Length: 125
Image 1 (tube, one colour):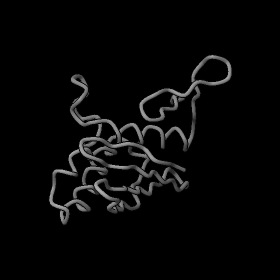
Image 2 (spheres, rainbow, N blue to C red):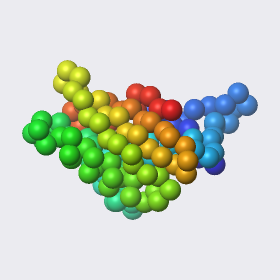
Image 3 (cartoon, one colour):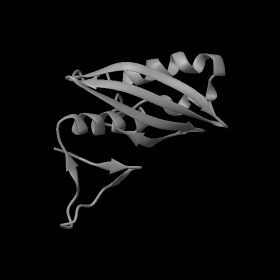
Image 4 (cartoon, rainbow, N blue to C red):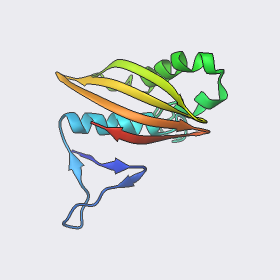
């Protein structure tokens, strides 16, 4: 069972413990962690995470293709997750990234905001 993280914090349950998820929600939680963690930030797991935080440094015309590549790279070690689509739209200075995923037969969506040097989860289902 995976523990739920929201913006880097574990979510408590009503009994003083931590909320967990299983099944498709567990797969989505792992995907969100891998997409929002900075690749290379963990010294003993340098391949964990994504390079999405670097998108703001790139030319705007190159960003959609790079976003798709960074998502695929981050989720490479999740063989049961299939990336269906990656859509990047601009919202002011930030970008909004929508990632459509498939786990077994279930469709899932993660929406992230990408600002200067950071990636945050907006919503998921």
